[in-house]
Amino acid sequence: MTKTTSRGRRGLGVAPLEGITGREDAPFGWAPLIILFAVGLTDRIETYIASGALPLLQAEWGFSDTMGGMIMTAPLILGAVALIPAGYVSDRFNRTGLIAVVVALWSLVTLGSALAPVFAVFFVTRAVLGAADTIDNPASSSLLADYYPPKTRAKVFGYVRLTTYAGISIGTIIGGVVGQAFGWRWAFACMVVPGLLIALLCWRLREPVRGFLDEVIARDPNKPLPIPEPDSGPSPDRAPGAGHPPKIITQLAYIWQVRTLRHVCVGLALLTLGIQGIYYWLPSLLNRDFALAPGEASTLSSLVTLSATCVGAIFGGWLGDKMHGSVRGGRLLASGVGLFVGGSWLAVALAMDHLVLLMSCVLLSSFFSSIAIPNTFASIADVVAANSRGIGFAVLNFLVVGGGALGPLVVGAISDAYGGSLLTGMYALLPMMIIAGLFVLLGRPHFDREARSVIVASRPDPPSSPPRDTRATPY
Image (cartoon, rainbow, N blue to C red; front, side, top):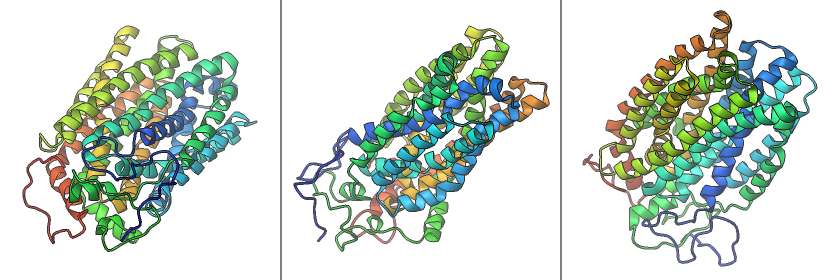
């Protein structure tokens, strides 16, 4: 038998001694969500400080818009290269410890950006940061799926993935406001201590057993099962999907067969291409076309997108949990429609030459687009087996980061080609959001069958073939 947890264990994210059931919203408590939220928020803030400080950086070093886009593109490219190895590691080693080390390292790299004597050194530190701050994504997403059951995953992923947009907004504000008041170097330096404190919290977070929560639901959601030790290894009474992961080639072949994952990956890659390309340059657009100071431009754009995205992601998580199990492929239906509507409002926003109208339309676009944030990532957690979720989220983030890497560069290059017209570059990326919604909807017919197969495979003695009934079922 698998040995169960001792009474003397300590840390954050500890389950009750009597075990957990599949009926609880948070069987391991809410501390893991809070800590992983802080990790994601710090990650994005540190990355997007450069967006708010960009006019100040260009004023000091005099580089072009194309190079301004490369400040964001280079880190994302290196981060994309590191994602598949990061997924491999997160499926095989302690995920909470991995995240703690990565958060501490990227905080020190951010200090290097603040101390950079020349642009070349600054550029290298930003590139290294990209390789560091994407490593935590597969581990964090895999952990969330092991901490929280399917019925609350959309809400949980909504909060954590909200950090992407919230971090963009807060980081942009810090870069613009702190940079304008005290110099851009202080904008980067002020994030070092918070990052190290969050790394310490991650170190104290208890590692959950992979796939155990899925097994609880598959056996009997109403019956508490004691928690096995994370290092107890495979055992005859554990489900096949809960043991050690297969070889990486086998994992990648399995991931490719998950149709929901394929469609969602492409959709999110296209969405990120458009969103990051447009929103990265939005403060600069307000600075150039509406004569706002860097601090004013970064604050206005960030507060609008942050408030709308917070409300939209929370609403999207609630909506996705309601539609999950009651509407076929409900999470992906909500995501696809939200992306269509959000893309349409963004097209209207860029056509406005009045500041209030422009930002009002950006607010509506951010709200509807963010409905997809919790539902797409929760969908991936539902359709990928526990021992391959790290590599599954790595593939997803590889495509998402790749799309995000190209966005700022495309807008900057087109702007240079058309005499500094940022609007021209932004218009070029607008169709990506509409196409993204289409791809997400194409994954909808496969979702319920593939999600059910993960639960079926989590039973200690799974049947030889998944059930044929493809009607929506809450699991």
